[in-house]
Length: 76
Image (tube, rainbow, N blue to C red; front, side, top):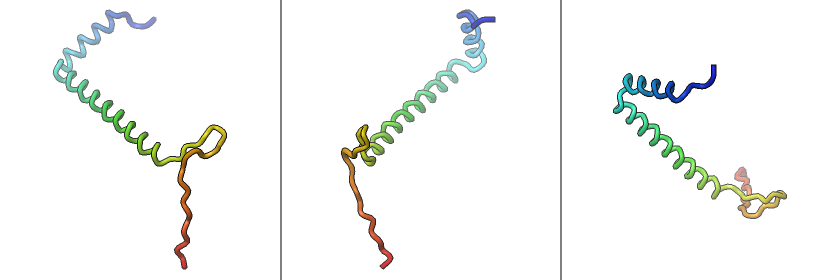
């Protein structure tokens, strides 16, 4: 009872192709590829906006770059 050989995987692939058809498998592959591409682009955009709005801190805890804002009390 070990792992499957290459022949087992080829038989499974042929059965899947017979059940679903090559056109449907191609559509599934392109949809999956588009989803992965969109996810990667979203991660890059998220990193770019998060990196520009966060402070950068050195390893010893000193602030290298950042912006301090004064809290204004508007109760008066």
